[in-house]
Length: 132
Image (tube, rainbow, N blue to C red):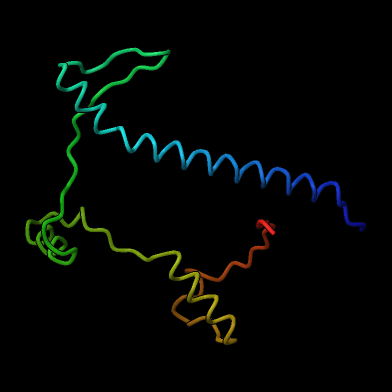
């Protein structure tokens, strides 16, 4: 099979466009973050919960989120003590297991027997590009 350089050039062009859009999005998000609190305070002080401006509805919303006061371990212990175990997640970190599998592959180590049939290394080939 012959290499299709036109296809690869199209891929590079799209990667550049994606990178430029990501950079623009990051700059815009930073600007939004700089004024978000001021906009919220301005609307709250004016007693306005929502308004339409230039085809968008801007609104304030009150949300409740947990604010951790102790260590993560203390929070887990407190939730368990309060019989709220369903809010404690036990699991594994996919990134960490991927790093483990890559290390095992480099060292030519076999998959531990306990993992067989449950989780296994999945070799995936991807094409990527970087600015050169």
